[in-house]
Image (tube, rainbow, N blue to C red; front, side, top):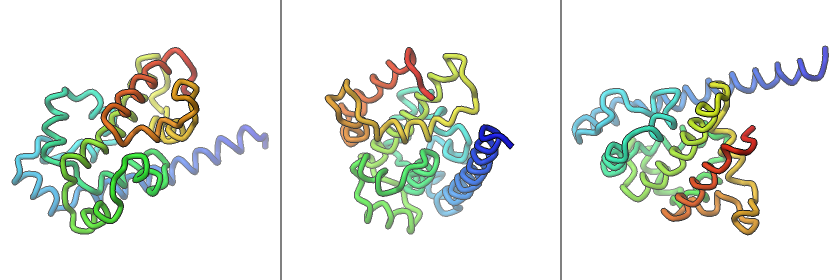
Length: 195
């Protein structure tokens, strides 16, 4: 058996494991308590929130600014932090560091099935939009729908870039202007390699 066939099988097996982990995390996000609270607060994504969908990041990226503002103001479920970090194949510690979120606070909110506050939701939305943006760029360029945008963004955030004076994009994701700058850099990737 050739190396290419073995690596394709290994990648396929790893992909299946990752997908089952992501699906399990997404099921946890849809807890009844959270759905009831979201519906009571008039959450715009009730009764089937976008984070229950496989293309959650792409849908958030393509949502109107007004809809994203409504989502952020009503609060993302705290468990979406774990769903997103799993989709990105990023260790949760790195995710917290990149977003500037306080781990004990978010972990408590996850245990209690609470929503993130507006600032926390804005930071998490910034990462989700970045994943959606990468997926959109690939699809618009005629790339494969099988492209793992989450993994690619997770890796890309940790690579030093000359455009950032050797800093990693992930170091800028904890501020509004930093997220905008990283998003602009990602848009420039459309003319380069993304895989």
